[in-house]
Image 1 (cartoon, rainbow over the protein chains, first blue to last red):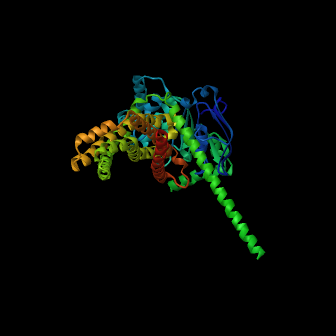
Image 2: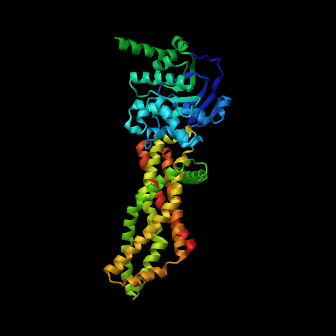
Length: 249
Length: 276
């Protein structure tokens, strides 16, 4: 388990985002320790994806600060990766071309080097046999792995996951979080995961936070989350218990 | 009565204020849109030296705009020439000048019809496809994905297409002209009996270097403007108010074709007034 005392790779202070008078993020604070998996929970429509897009620079916050570790600031885009909820794969490019794209456009690698690195990334995610396939010819899980391969091919230090298991069945959800854990160990990145798949994320995360009404209502370890007396946190925990009880019956 | 009079005046003032507000909002929106388009165009041009591995995407853009548009451009060119030959022959024959048919067809094609109609055909075939493709890229977050990967989306998606226009539009305009001249020959000489030597010698003597200059300048200008409009329209699909998803792509595509067509005709008038 990664402790919060480790030097943070990312610090968010008082982040605020408003869309035409609707306050989506009122004042969000979050600390992401280096090497950890931090999951941000929240109900649908609470601004989890907006928060992540602010971190990725896709949205400009109205107020607040996002501080990255100094070593990350040099070539931030290369060192920070984003896995979209819908994967955002280029449907007219093959799996290999999708993975090679960031290498072609952002590095000085030659063709052979790009091919080697891209094939290595595909191989490590079990997609080497599908290098010539287009995304539409792959299953949902394979597309997710392909998107992860593309995110990891530049060896980022921070990966932002937007609802990585949304719309998947329970075994597939487990597989996605197992994949994040496995490749986090292999590629050694820090992960911020925005999700409402609480049980799977609790099992995979080092730290969790709960976004509600534009603020982080809870920030701590999964154990602290499970033991919390806070009624909003409990509503998430109780839901899991209710669900599990229902399933057991 | 004074109250009713006051009420009527008040209503009139309110309507006037609303009208001014609407006009003001539309004007500000138009100016903002033009500014956004200008910024987009300058970014597309400025991205040229920084864009890496442009070759393959440039070749694909040349294929999309050029090779795929050859059939439609040549067919339209042929019929434009046939109609010009037919109309021109009967018009000139009234004045006993049927021998000037070659001059009429060649100058009409070179100075006006070839650059304008070729541009409109390319917009209809390739520009609409481009707007739709970029709109889908936008909707499926592929453009955002490029941004998060540190790739300039305008440089990656728009610049190769813009560079392709500089080659494709003049070549297709010349093809349109040549096929149109052949069409004029078919209707004027083969169908209506004008001597082919008279027709072709009139064509040869009518076209001056200045006409070719006007023709090619127009084609390049129309190409750059229309392709930028189509790309901008697809690229800003998420700005379409009131619609989203596939409907927004459809609106963007329609908007691209309409705006590019209007821009072509407006630019044609401006450039012609400059050359005449």
